Image (cartoon, rainbow, N blue to C red):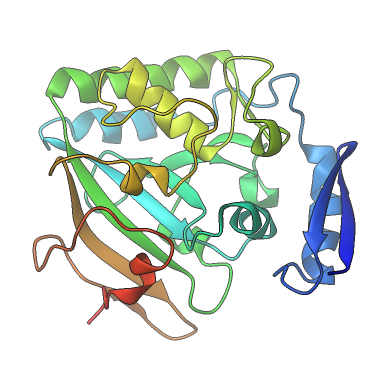
Length: 254
């Protein structure tokens, strides 16, 4: 098979030209975005405003945190999907079921600096048929508070998106992370982690490595040009252990 070569911050990533989903436009976006990233120093501080923390702490009475997996169609997501062969290649956290406190590490969408940023479900819609799935994890109030407190520390100290870490799985500074690295780290630090993994954590690990019934599927949102389909929590549950084939086999949206 012919091989294509794409240079990423001095590192070489090989793509099979016959199977890569990256278009020339995607590669152009990535090349333009590279100067905005830095995997060696923090780029952003106080990216989460006081209103965000007010809303997050206001959700402490809800005994759940929400794990959101998304297929955004972004060029970075396509790169991750190439290596993981998974349908969902971004993971975020929310402290409320309406996802008004959705947060993760991302590239900033060309607006904010790459690192810790607020997200909105509609911001994850980068292609026709983009979708996200939501799971909820029961937590103690002290764990949920510790999670929000950890976000406040990162917000104050600074952060950057770990672009090189997508390949190496490593960080030069504690708050330089990619999305799944971030979610796993804050869950672990707060005592809310529900699985263990050595090495690089991938978005689908948050579903595939779950044990027991602690993680509960609550709904799927599918975007298209006209409508958003959303099934609210509690209507129906599906098996928790899903791989890249079975997660697309279930008709999660009626």
